[in-house]
Amino acid sequence: MLRNSIIAGALVVAGVVAGVLLTAQLDMTTPTAAQNAAGPVNAQYEPGTGYITQNGESPFVAVAERVGPTVVNITSDRVI
Image 1 (spheres, rainbow, N blue to C red):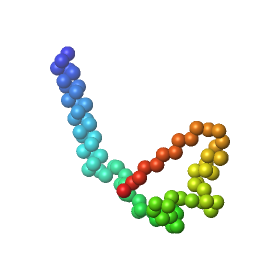
Image 2 (cartoon, helix red, strand yellow):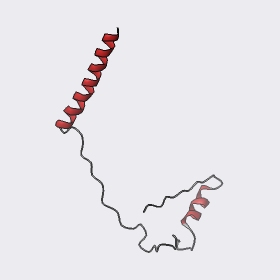
Image 3 (cartoon, rainbow, N blue to C red):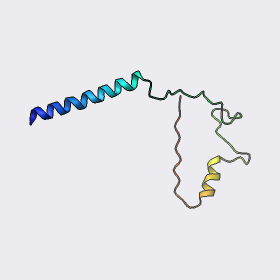
Image 4 (cartoon, rainbow, N blue to C red):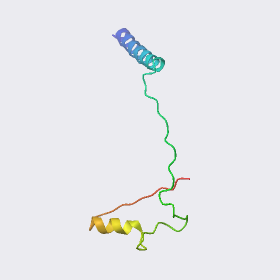
């Protein structure tokens, strides 16, 4: 019983290794590439001033008015 389990495990490992090697050698995976960095979303944005609409409000005010009495959670991450 133990011998059969060991043989079955070895066959599974050998199959996974053979599949990885076969896939790598035949270039079966699709190539990926990063996209070019996009330009600024708002060309008139100046760091430290924040985004202001033409009405002089934060764009989040329009979102809050549109969704009405709803719980809104807006988060942001600063990427350096």
